[in-house]
Length: 178
Image 1 (cartoon, rainbow, N blue to C red):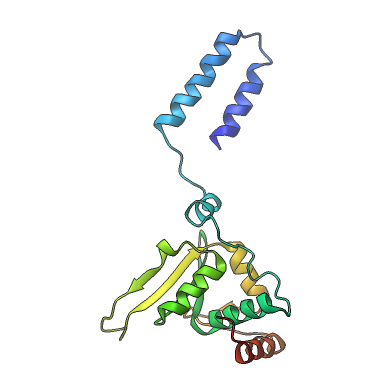
Image 2 (image 1 turned 180 degrees about the vertical axis):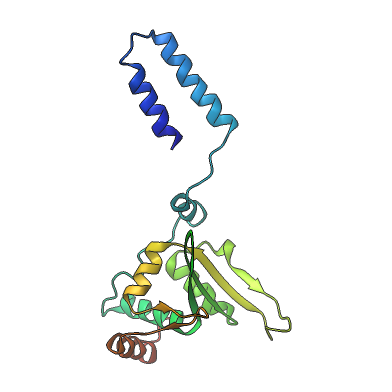
């Protein structure tokens, strides 16, 4: 955002009769300000900064081939162990399981940074360790909603379209992709 202001100010300064030296002074002021006051990342920049390989549109298109069956498998896992949760600032997508290998395979498939995988240790609510990955991204969430995932009151996901449900369960039952 600051780059836009800097560009606008510099282009505005050209309308006046200023010297090249004055123009360079304005540029150096912006440069010093940026060095001393690092700007916060926007939501869009955060997802690409923390997860540079994330496939934001992983579930956009599911074809009837090996990769499509793999996507259908993970979509089915999202229905069984995933969640969508809406905040004021975005939609959280999460997937968790007590099977760490399953979570690792899901993370690898969508391009999530494995350093941000979290673990919940056993306590009075959870009997065994629980591994999960969660992030905020509206594009990713919209693709999941397109395929029939909607958020319930308790973060429960369910299908609203029975044809999509049958197709994805068939892929889950008859394909071994991991």
